[in-house]
Length: 586
Ligand code: ARG
Image 1 (cartoon, protein in one colour):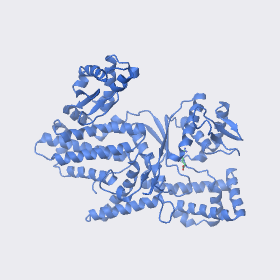
Image 2: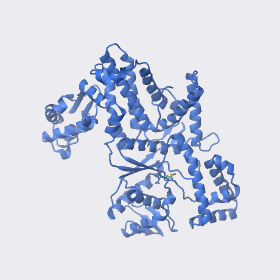
Image 3: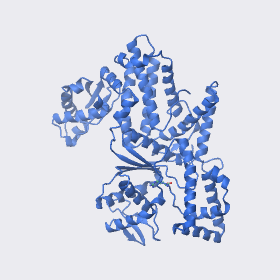
């Protein structure tokens, strides 16, 4: 049964084999198996059409020749009813015995976990996410990289990859001059201990304000920066201290969001690694000098043949491109990365396109492997006018404030619904609901589009929201709580094949889980999994409303309980992969 874990994948292989036996040219044929319109079947293979078009043949004839081979294949014929629809789609309808067999084989979290862990076995992926600039508060926009990045890490791990979580801090900026100037004069120690990021940001603002008005102070700020860059002991010490405080402040938010990094290798870490980049790129003639700067043109590219990638500034200083190139090399050599994923907003699109093009040429010319590279980019969070959301004072909203507001709002809703729950439980539930709702709202829209932030929407119990899914999970749990002891242990033995259309539809949705994980991983777009979960909950509701679960006949009850349990396992597991905790009750 193990090789049927990914039904679509397995069918894809079988259809391809059948096409070969039917003497089709495999160079031109792709089986293209995907979930089907339920009216026609559970899966469909669409490959006959483009093949026929390319070869000026009759698509139905092509589909029939493949079907003839498939029908005589016991592996397929015993599990599916086959048919051809429309101009030449091959439809596969799972026989109820097969559906049941699948559900029994992958009925535990363990068995699902184990089967999924082969999908990316042996791969090491470095995921660079979070990655804010230091000595500053995180604001609302920062949540996207964290939440999307963490979901991607968990999904990759679920598929068996070894994931290295690296927080590539922007910790070597020009802001340090003004910050140090103010730090040395106006530090509020108490505030620094209590709210490190808040105090560091305040100090920077103070430094900035003074420097704007006072020429002498501005010069002192510049000197502070130069001293730091020249490695003057006192300022390097202070820089380290500021970073420690920054990371401390960041970690408070990370803890709330349940995110933990393996490394904090920020831009500063690569300072002494950029010279090798310049040398190698010059030697391989990938880079050239232009007006004192070191630049890379990509003549084969529409835009980057004119717009160069500046990898060293004309004053000789390194920049974002230099440190990122060094970072690519370090991740390949030190972490042995097969893949590198960097999660940032879409304004950095050009930078990462140029980084990818440059790295590819550089690694090829120097005989290195080139890791697979993905820039996972995302759009803005806006208000209903399409503008970046701001607090009432007009400043960006601090991330921590947003999370706390969400917890408070959830508390109001949860305590009104459950006036009898003890206070500590109410608070725990409100925390989970509050954090989950903000996270889930960030994951449901396709990441490359902007989305409109709305408290009403994200805390609603209707629609594709965290509260809706968390509630769906608690509802199934309450079915199990009411069962007589011993019943759940026997369901796999007692269950008989599915009969009603709702049972069959839910079973099929459950089996689609595998495909939905695949697509999510292939595209690194967590919203695919969110949409799947919403559909799964919908299929569950339809089933639950139309079919009584606790009936007297043990075989019917068992198969329905099997569906309930499987839905719950997948809901819980998938929400976990999205970084969302489920609740026993809410
Ligand atoms: N610090 C950058 C920012 O705040 C993001 C860094 C992303 N990672 C990287 N390797 N460039 O926008």
